[in-house]
Image (cartoon, rainbow, N blue to C red; front, top):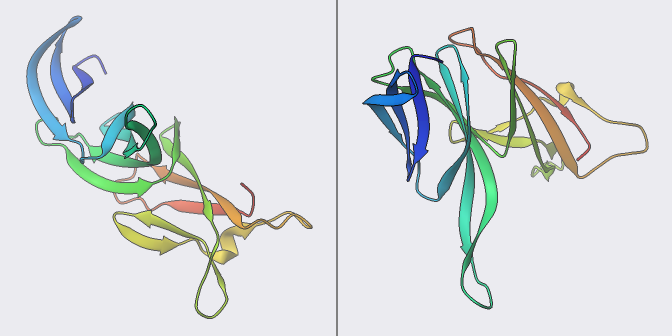
Length: 170
């Protein structure tokens, strides 16, 4: 953003004062949850969107190796760069920011509830939530057991909620 430099280091996202191309003083550091590694940072005005890969060690013939088993995003309010505030968190996503709107796309399996009704569930801020079935679309003769959801969040609005549309394709 010209005033600050953002980088990944070990298990942290660091924010430094910018002095030309040379990092200045450390302004703040955001710890990343164990088991996650940063994939990308997106900056829009006073919002920092962090895309993380969930890494798990898997057995291998030669030696254990790391495998990506999921993703999540965390959005931080950077109004005060010295005190970043986590605003929201979601899992298994792909990201884009266009004209102040965060678009994220995720895919998951359709689940059945105890009453045999389908449920399109996702995790937001650590809570299981469901996509409204009235906002779910499908193509005739092409029903899938997986769904793709496209969610938007207006980053310019302080208390904006996610707007989610889903499609029975994946």
